[in-house]
Image: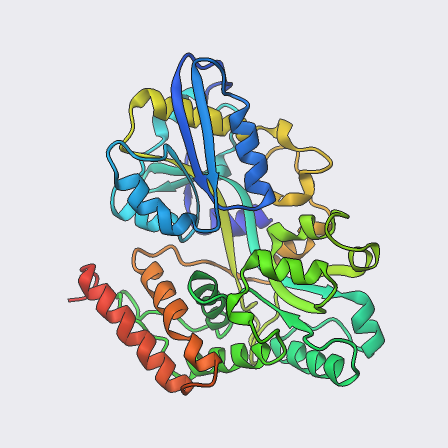
Amino acid sequence: MLKKILIASVFTLASSAIAHAGCGLSGGNVKILGNEFPAIQTVAKGAMACADDNVTVTANLTTEHRDLQVAAMTANPAEYSVAIVANSSIVPLMNDGLIRPLNDLVEKYGGKLKKNQLITIDGKIMAVAFMANAQHLFYRKDILEQAGLDVPTTYEDVVAAAKVIKEKGLMEYPLSGTFKSGWNLGEEFVNMYMGTGADMFKPSTAEVSVNNENGVKALNMLKELASYMNPDFLTYDSNAAAAEWEAGNVAMMNMWGSRAGPIVDDEGSTPEVVAATAFAGAPTLGGGSVPATTLWWDGFTIATNISDEDAEASFRAMVNGIDPSILTDETKSQAVWLIDGFEPGLTAEGVFATANAGAKPYPMLPFGGLLHSAAGAELADFLQGKESAEQALTDLEAAYTTAAKEAGFIK
């Protein structure tokens, strides 16, 4: 069901014939750029198994990958042959023609791929998805029980629960989240605004439509959540928030499902925290029925500005990187894998619950990234109490509109 909701409802799936795949490469250079978390590390490790005397395979996995990918892929030849992307980060690469259609390579070497892994746009396979993801609720069963609280299902419940936990002296900062200024903060705003059920753009246009009561509602909730977080919340990305959780300092957070496995893997934490960690669907906002989050896929793309030999080697190495053989007792918990043989367990519960509750996919729009970036840059002052929600939204709208005009999306 998750796969149908996440992939089939958003993209037209490819129907190309698929042939047998494997390494067996005679030459080529494979250079991978991607995010840094355990599931991506597993994929990269599988791809690197294709390296031999004739083939080089290297990987740069970094949380700064989005800031690097466009410039790196614009170079000719491209600095990387593979970019591991998601719903949002594929858009600028497609806009600038920096990634190539994969139809021919899928036909020749994609025998172990499933049709719902093939991200197809206007008849062209532009990416191969290997995992699903979403931010959803992580919570400490023991802390909620000590506070006499049920598992929150709304963000209003989350705030109320945090208040009780703090007043009872159970934790000083009961909440955490990925509120780091920039991309992470932009994602938090997009998630919360999606929970209002309103559109972020005026119908059939690139004109932004968040400077309204729904935008104010989303911002006010983000500020309420931040008031129960460590005062340094604007520096917290996924790594920092996960570290706070493993240290036992946090009772609840909305965190990526791909972090669930590593958080309960008995490494970097205590048995008490691991045993008490549980997962639920993303909360709703303001009486709405749609979870205040977005559904994502992660997958790989192949650069345009590289030789055909490197493109073939890169594709075949990445197919090896997402072969069903990578699924072990350790790696199965790292993600909601879109790979044959994956059976969801405890760590996939939050993503499945979120998808089944009707969460919407992250909007894959040519101009969506500009709004995301504007939100990440313009909302920190509001969260720090330096300006009103209305002023923050006015600043966001102005920054987005300027960028959209420069990009030609708005006249």
